[in-house]
Image (cartoon, rainbow, N blue to C red; front, side, top):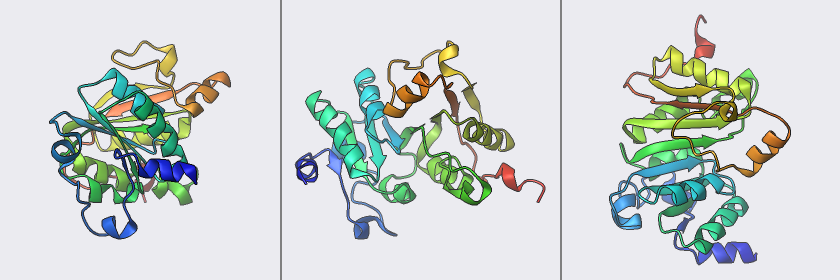
Amino acid sequence: MARWAEMEQMDFVIQPRFDEVYKKDYVLKGRWGKDFFRNDHPVVVELGCGKGEYTVGLAEHFPGKNFIGMDIKGARIWRGAVTARDKNLKNVAFLRSRIEFLSSFFDQGEVSEIWLTFPDPQPGRRREKKRLTHPRFLEMYRNILVPGGYIHLKTDNVDLYRYTLDVVRLNKFPLKKSTTDLYGENLEEMVFDIKTYYEKQFLEEGKAICYLQFVPEGNRSIKNPSHEGE
């Protein structure tokens, strides 16, 4: 397809083979600033970036940071990559791979912030481990974040918001911001004019947007609130 061929020509779109990351470190691990962006600016990662609206939007707002959008869907990444190219943004990269391989791409303390923008809420107890705020993922994030590094969650799903808030409180993580109505409150330092495709749909439907910002600090195993009392 023309889109795949076009992405192959974009040097800021990284599409590693399975054998390059499965149970091994990718060549850029620990070297994103030095070898890829060629600066020492903070690295911010958006997981499940979709069409890259947030990755691109944040890169425009914060030229002093480097932004990497990660998603497994090539068609989605293509849209964000084309936008970044047309805007001539030099602080943007897209990484096509599974989030489960995150530790293969980033070294300990290499990432300053992680954005989770409208991830699949994975409803029900049987799908709980697939939630991107489940302890198994949070431990992975904690390992690659700098000390004090933030995780941002935006979602229209109140159950996912409450589940994540329970994880935060149970593990006594510093909670920086929390709301069930992001656009109904005046939260400082939030970028309100960046909205994903799905976020715009949710707002048109009258849904409130939930937001959490927290720091997954500590070195103990992260507890899961669903298992408390078992």
